[in-house]
Length: 108
Length: 124
Image 1 (cartoon, rainbow over the protein chains, first blue to last red):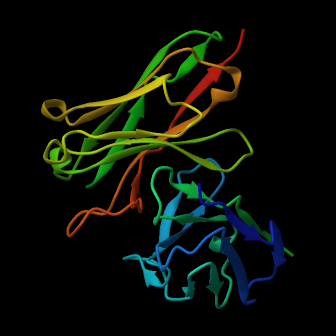
Image 2 (image 1 turned 90 degrees about the vertical axis):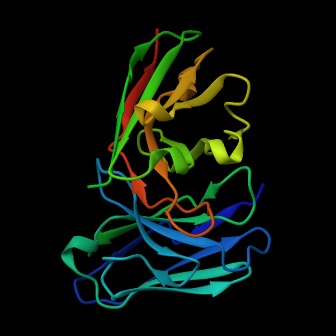
């Protein structure tokens, strides 16, 4: 199984800050990577797919990059509604689908 | 509006069974694969399993942690997917989400629509 490792596990930031979250796959997954946002008590929401493609309706302050084993999710200017937990997911090797452990973005 | 609505969660004793349902609307359910993903309280996301469409022979796949105990099925006439859970363990306690891959083009393993989830508690 491909293991997905996210860092950091949590980050404290202020509105307007640039936030970067990293995700590392235990083996190469090309660009088969997605990012999800999850708010407390809610279902995950797809933000980014194919490592860098923005899902329809997602604000352009979210961006993704990377290929192979190393990926990043960047929020260019953090907004109040962006405080949430973010997960990466590999979509290359199946079964199983695997997720990273999550990164909680908290208010500083 | 594209929508997935899970139901059937509840409290069950260890070793018991439960069947979850996922009612779909707003898209061509019969042509779509469907996945189940779970999340224990305060923990991350865990993929449970998937069922493909009739065109793909209703092929199923499962996580190792549930293989042999859980079964995914579907009734395209009712636009509903199911998760039959047998021999339940305390570690199966979680919110269970059904979700689908993006439509159009070839099938991928991304998940663009999620239900709100249903809670399963396994406890004596």
